[in-house]
Length: 70
Image: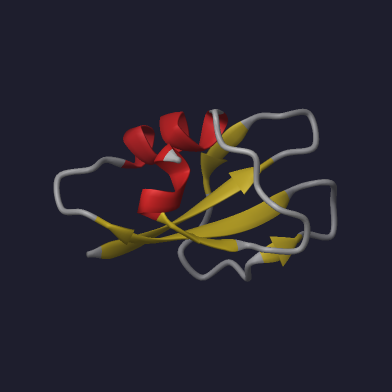
């Protein structure tokens, strides 16, 4: 199981974040999230696609991959 860091920009663009990025709000208008327990064979693009339909809670920046499909 892997973890993938993704960044959601203020205007809504979602992309992969640097693996050393700190989770939470950035100095700009972006927010970095860590998606944990991503199964082998699931690509970054798959995680980003799942996150696009996910509504994250305020002030929570780490989610299990299984949470994205609920």
